[in-house]
Length: 153
Image (cartoon, rainbow, N blue to C red; front, top):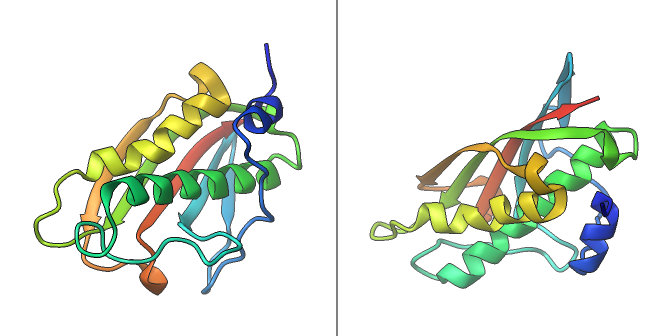
């Protein structure tokens, strides 16, 4: 069975350095075997994906933004697991937030960008419970933000 790192490599994904918090919070908190990962925005080294979905961001771009949040979540998982993604037992829950215009309703389709990546990377252990919510604004104008709860060994 391929490792998470091999699956990510096959997908052409190189994990970035975990994104540092932009306010007074920590990137993750471990309680027992559960790790609560703070919201990860759709940022990358090129600046990321900002804007309002359904207004100046189309569905395909929004899905890519959610996938980018997933990449950032996996980078935080790796940091929480002291560099060893094999310690991830299960992706327990994702909470997805999409900055949407007044007529946009395909919020679950957007968050599938992150959900699909979790399954691609972790297989059955990547299947999770989830919330997908449309919001008026997200931090720094980013299109998507996703937080997670993950079980580690």
